[in-house]
Length: 98
Image (cartoon, rainbow, N blue to C red; front, side, top):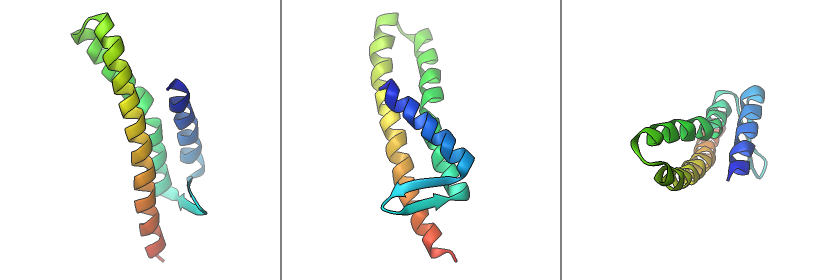
């Protein structure tokens, strides 16, 4: 799972720097819309860290490890799906504007 998070982090940074997000099938999202999706792709690692820190204060170590892993997987996939779905929606808006 960590490899997926690292890949999302690297791709998110590239999107933020270049301002272009390739959604697929020749669809390229540009400028601020692409950077928004890049920010979403970067967000899982800090968010998971913050949640793990809070859980560490509230639960025993064994429980934190099991619950933290499940929460990490959930947040990673939600962020990935959100970036792709939002990217498609923003691409349609980008196409409508002249």
